[in-house]
Length: 335
Image (cartoon, rainbow, N blue to C red; front, side, top):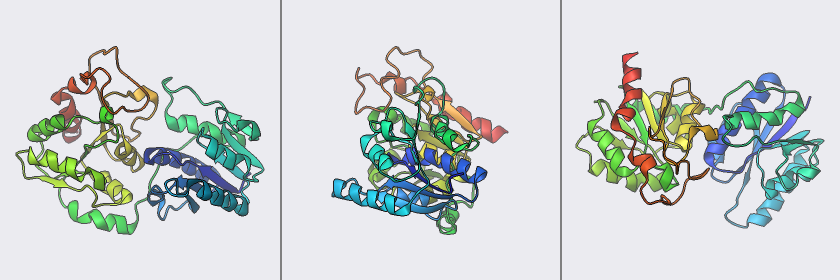
């Protein structure tokens, strides 16, 4: 059994969170394995002090991209991995895998360099009901491992201490922002929700530093004094720690949804232009999907979000009723 394993996932934050399911499954079935992971610069903070990771390799794609790519290749070869598992279908990661020097090179058959891998796996079509972690778990079969785990993040004692002052009473978390316009529940809808949501405790508005102004804009239009703008104030793992203790986490189809899943926090995911059938839905034990009840012929309009609604009406978001938003919270409070 391979004892020194590298997992490659240099895509976005949420993709890295979902890839942690592989770490969990490998460790549970082969506790002696030494596991490394390769991520893009900025995402390494997700894996600080992770108990199952021995090494985090970081690719800076923004500056000197190709020189840094070569440095990563040298680092991979120097580490002498027994197996490399490539979760991506891009040429850059495929070439790393092919040139890794590992005895076992595993990846999806759609990768341009898959012909140089020792084992290729068919990537199941998005939209057939499989979750992304199931598609990724297929990559473990050449190692004789089987899927048996969900994603997991491990906030440190420092992360827990950073949020304990916000957890003295029952609270909600909301993450209003998304990178993509059509994956973000509209600002005026968030304002309506917050003005009338049946909850009197603190409501923490999460996000990165770039989301502070959006959260401020929402707060300025809400006639309540229980909102706290947390954008840019917490690390990824501290945000996850705060989500874990919440009565409910309201999120878009975006990274905070995956953070909630990875700490098994209660979550209500609002879907606008995308759909859960793509396989990126919430995985917490207490999970709710909120989406339009109307059968819109234009939805979904793409696998990823768009910068604007192609038809200019954004009905996939505008037709979500406030009662749909409140229902998960009421259900949790009454249980």
